Amino acid sequence: MKRIVTLVAAAALIMGLAATASAELAVKAAGSWRVHGNVLSNFGDLNDDADDTYADTFTVQHRMRTQLRFVYNENVMGELYTEYGTATWGQESAAYGAGENEDGDAFHVKRAFIQFRWPDTDIVTTVGEQDITFPSSGAFSNMVLGGDDGSAIAVSAPITDMIGLTVAYTRLFENADVTTGNDADAFLAALPVTLDGMVLAPWFSYGIIGQNTDLNTDDETANVWWAGLGFNMDMLDPIVIYADFVYGSADDGFGGLADGTDGWLADAMVEFKGLDFALLQAFAAYSSANDDGDGAMPNIRSDWGIGGSMVNGSAFTSDLGGANPGFWMVGVAARDITFIERLSHDVIALYAQGTGDAITGLNDDGDTVVQNTGFLGDLALTSDDSYWEVDFNTRYQMYESLAAIVELGYGKPDLDDVAGLTTQRADDAQMKASFGFQYSF
Image 1 (cartoon, rainbow, N blue to C red):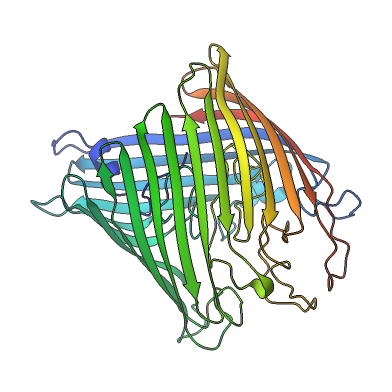
Image 2: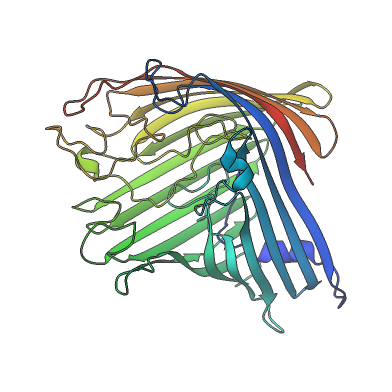
């Protein structure tokens, strides 16, 4: 599960970390380190016969994330969060500095921020490089902007015992090569409401995207906005319900679309926690799309996925990435299936189809449109295309902090030919077998 209201690394962090009012500095460490091997088939181009393919290959990788929190007292703290990005064994770049961050550095600072409480108030401010994930219900992360870090300031304060307020500003991008229209900025307001057995998280974001940034291809500034609601309810225990609804609209040029776009996403999950040996889930989602790339909700970086699946759900790196707008999906999962102490299994099955009449990036006549996001990376789905997947994952908790994990997955698209494409749409199956160790502390 992901988060209820993020972007803020704010109030919950400082409250939970600093239980003492002592003036002594306390340094606290947390982290997640992993080493794993992957056997992946057709993850790059969905084509068994392609010469250049990230397919039928075996790699070994590692990644180490470490958080150091410097707590002065319950009012002031700072965090330095470093990452030795995913390095592939045997590649020269792994030794000399390749990794996950956009600058290509294996060892880099992932987050670095100061967090403090305004004197004699409950107002908590977080400023610096931090998690800028937009809010969600907790079952799925945010499709607009999720799983990302960036430069931001976030201010959180309780309004009542049940209602809170978070406002934030983040600079998403700045082009240093030009002096006008070179910034992409976003503002966020979230109003989490905690009731007896229910949490509501309404939020609104507005973005100003300069014409000389990589998010805008128009010759003028583009405006974009989103309104969303995350919801979860556990008053029906042992049944828990999660849901999200997001609507967004963008001016011409945003995301490369000449005519702009607007669209929506709805998702939901029902969990049943009444069994001693398993957690049962059923989930569904719908995100709008039509021809020419419009009719789809604008997004910056999707982190939407199903935990444990190839839809942005791997404990390692063996998945196809976050789902982008323009699909509907249904699925079921049985998680934490446990019959032997410390040994658990997850089983996930899902089915998806596109919601647009043509691939995002092509219109009915086969003419190319600039934007081409697809459902999962290069896997773009029309309303005539489908994708199904099954996963079986096993976790052996060797020690409280160390787990051995095996992930097995099989995904199969069924794609129709589309006029205007210069090559056949490959729809061979994707298969994965990942195995490794995860050390959490």
